Length: 157
Image (tube, rainbow, N blue to C red; front, side, top):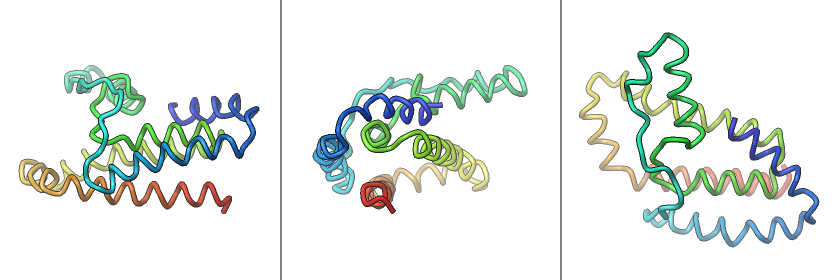
C-alpha cells in the first residue's frame, strides 16, 4: 500500500521537470547512503513503537493482516535505518506507479524474511545475538543494494 501511494504521489510531482527532481534526490540520497555505509544510520522521523504481538492471535486473518499493515506502512514500527525514507523519496521523485508497486512488494518480502528466518533458525535467542553483532553490516549491505537499485532507476535500465 505504501509503495502504491508513493508511486501515485510521484505522478503528481511529475509536473516538476525530471532534471530538477533528480538533482533534488541525489544530495539527500547521498547523505543517507553515506551514513548507512559508514554503519551510522540516521534516525529520521518514525513512530518508535513496536506493533504489539497480541494483535496476531485476534483471528486467523485480521490479526496478522493488521500486524503486517501497521508494520509495513510505518503506522506503528521501529526502523533502525533511514533507507525506507530514501526509498519513498526516490519513488516520489523519480519512480512512478510500477516502481512503487515493486518496491512495496520488495519491502513486504524483506519484512517477512526476518521473522521467518528467526523462527526457522531453531534458536531464536542465538539468532537475535547473531543479528545484533552484525547489524551495521546488514545496514551496509542493504544500503549497497539500495544504491545499485537507485543507479539502475536513474540510468533508465
